[in-house]
Amino acid sequence: MKKLAIIAVLFTTFTFSAKAQWFDFSENYNDFTIGFNGGVVGYDFNGTLDKNIADAGFGISVSLLGVYVDFIYQQPEHKFGNKITPMVYYDHSALTINAGYKIPVTNWLNITPLLGYSNETYGETDCSTINVEFESNSVYHDYNVTERFNHFNYGLGLSFKPTDWIELGGVCTAHAVYGNISLNLLGLRKD
Image 1 (tube, rainbow, N blue to C red):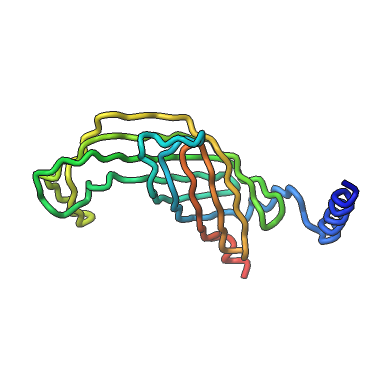
Image 2: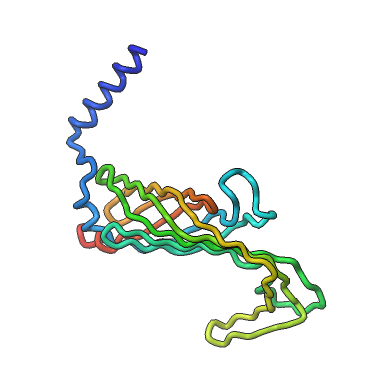
């Protein structure tokens, strides 16, 4: 126990001697990030899967002056197939939208408490249908939702800045776990 106390005192002394600014909210004045998310969406944090819909999802994030918003989505697996068959697949989708405020622990580390919304859907992808969207040059099949589950979402994000213009992070919420890489547009002007 004495060793642990000595290590804690030495660590605290070292940290304060490094002149780190703890909880300096002025760091958020240089915050305007746009990022890309990737991870797993569509599960319950208590360890059970929502009828096996946890799967890879992708999305975006934006933060401005410390206010953080992100979105991650998992699309139905067979919706964007390019083959016409008489098959009907039982698919699922999931999405999560979160918002929070970045709390700068130091000038390179942020903690972000998050609140948001999550939903999962179950449905049928009818591969005998085909639709064309000319604006995005995409071909897709009809996905008819049969069940929808809506959830209140909550969690925590952690991010660190290896440079002024790049930010790496991770988010763990009740219905998604994902990583994030962001570009700080205001940090670019510092260099």
